[in-house]
Image (cartoon, rainbow, N blue to C red):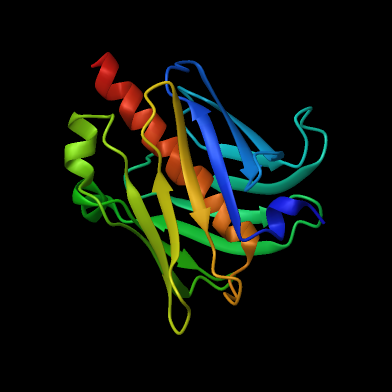
Length: 193
């Protein structure tokens, strides 16, 4: 099994100034690479894959938007090897304007968790160099934290999962990639527009 799916602390990185393709890499606590993803910048419908290797030969997780409109989109998550439905992530449109908010749903569409921004999203959208802080809430479980670093060249977010947390690590990786990808697109649009 890939280390990305078993570790409790990792960092996701991407270059801030990639306008046409966003390349993401996941690194363990020692800085060794443990996963990769690539996202085309102007694609209307999200379709992402997280790979175990840089050559993108070993797919781990598939993330696919159900619709073209992103503002309140739902993203299906599946195991790339088995096709197992891992559930979905639903962005909360207007609520996400002030603070990024997503619902985590199980494979039956029932909400079991929430991904919530702890910083002020609208301020970050105006000043893209302000780092964000997030947490994932699941009833009866300690919070998972995601904190962005402050580096204008290389955006990074460190993910901390309490070792006793029961959440599927594939869902966490998908949520962090989606958040980083959407945030990256919003920052690029703010700079261009």
